[in-house]
Image 1 (tube, rainbow, N blue to C red):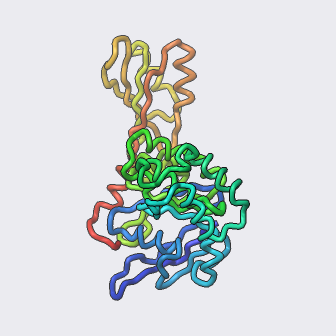
Image 2 (spheres, one colour):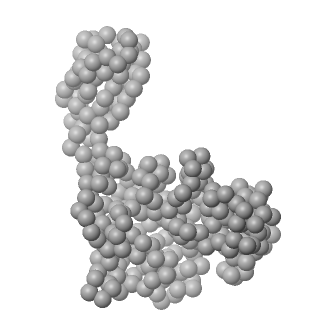
Length: 314
């Protein structure tokens, strides 16, 4: 759906993006991460056709963004960090205006009504945009990105400035949209990327430094193959039981945080997954597993590790 090949962008002698390549498949939700000044915004502006590349190509649904800009852009719905809203228009007027601006050929009333239903903005359809909350403005901004039913959605910081309830609502909407669209999501909220995205790309100083699922990145960058578990059972017998599971290297008693329980720090061999065996053996003895948490690196840890060097391109 999206193919980026050897993309480079220079501003005079300064190289903002350095020979990056990646592809995004149909129906995939991609998290696009990078610290301020990494070249992330430059890359997204090239993807949407707002900037031209110095070298390399970007293809959207088979159309080169430079050679066939109109055809490529027709496949993109874009929500910038600051939604392009006209505050003195009502939601109805604004969406009608964007429908005409995009030269949409779908049945106007039916199409806009469907979008409003998906974005849950039917109840503010006749209100002035300047009187809407931040959350509703974000929804209206996403609604304009959906006009024309583009197969690709590019969302830049869609939850910035929202309260926790609104963030959860927008996350849910993005996951719903991902069932029918290819989505590129840029965000500084790493928990949001982990919750929503199938895959993560991290860019730093204009270079692509990571490209994989959050789970695979954690396994790749973490040397710590440990699992902390809390078992409602006798400490000595629980330790012996866990030690007998294949793939377990060592078991350390980490004490008791609740009455009648024991916390065990379990070190396993690389790529060993003991969770199912552990559950089955505990269930046979009637010892509930109350808690289980991997000690592997989080996406935040990986991001900091990969981008800890200061500087870079905007």
